[in-house]
Amino acid sequence: MNIAYWNIHGLNEDKFQDDLFIENVCKYDIVCFAETMLRESPGNLPGFTSPYIVKPIKAKKRGRPSGGMLIFIKAKFKNVISEIKQNNFSIWLKIDGTFLNLEKNIFLCFTYIKPYINKDISELTFTKMENDISFFLSKGEVILSGDFNARTGGLNDFIQNDGVNDNFTDCPVPEDYTPDLPLERNQLDQKNNLHGNLLVNICKSSQMRIVNGRFLGDSLGYFTFYNSNGKSTVDYMLTSQNLFYTINNFMVKPPTDLSDHCLIALNIFNYKNSKEIDKEELWSLPGTFKWADQSKDIYIDALLEENSVEDILSLNKLIDDNNFNDIDFLVTKTNEIYLEAAKKSVSFKANFKKIHNAKTYKKGKT
Image (tube, rainbow, N blue to C red; front, side, top):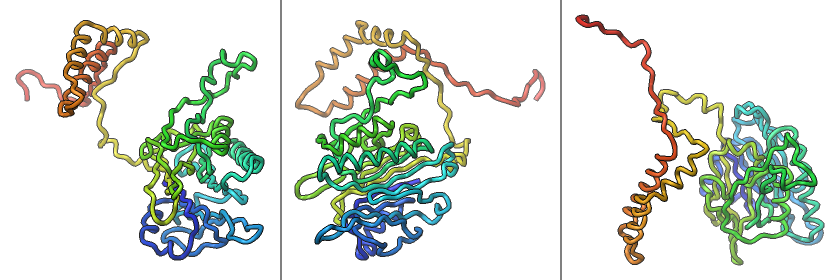
């Protein structure tokens, strides 16, 4: 299942008729357009149902309304997905977990949070979001996607070492507590702001995790917003920690003239489809390496052996800062040194394929 979110910064009929626009969005199963500034849809997308609508907020004085969302769902999923709740900055949908062969339902939230106005408004908005997340986590798994106007550069979305009781002497960790996974995250945008801090605090309190910068397709944590003043990462997708194993990839699409924001997309593995894979097409592994408690020490000792040290020093002498032609040779030889050391530190168990119903031949008979 492919889920896309795009702050389209104003939606109109012209965009719906744009070939690039159609090409960008129709490949996905669920598409949310945010900051539409519309009270109704300007049209329909081919192959999709009529959209769910979150109406924009009217300006108190002159000026256009702000916010607003349209959520389109492929027609084939109309019996799998339903609306649960919405307010003026978010909408919650329920995805039937059995469709993805999951034990729990998935609650998908799309949101658009306005830029910072004052601390009280920001904290109130994120508190409402946190309360909703907590409620739906009690019912199933959660995916959160939106433009949070949050910059999270350099901020962890998990609690470090929260599974070690020595760090919580005044309040020991309960036996049934699930520690946070210390998952490193890359991000080109190294700045942070109040919304960024509020967002990662939600992650820490609810064990939600930011997908950006952690998966194939966005391993560097690309920028999602570009304008004349610069670029930043403010559009995110988050999932509950238990859903990380279902993610195939996450993409930040290249910027276009259609919006100053990039489309972001998440692909979730469909376990129902995976059962249809022909097992005969799968390759068997030649064997497995067995790791033992002493393997680490053996590996270090192997690297410190005289032969290994001499080989490394010999390669070091061959390095020429002004000549890059031999880089492949040097990398290959370095890998060979580490591989030989690794072979000494772990045992290898080959997989032997049993032959069933083999014919028995006796001497003199055919």
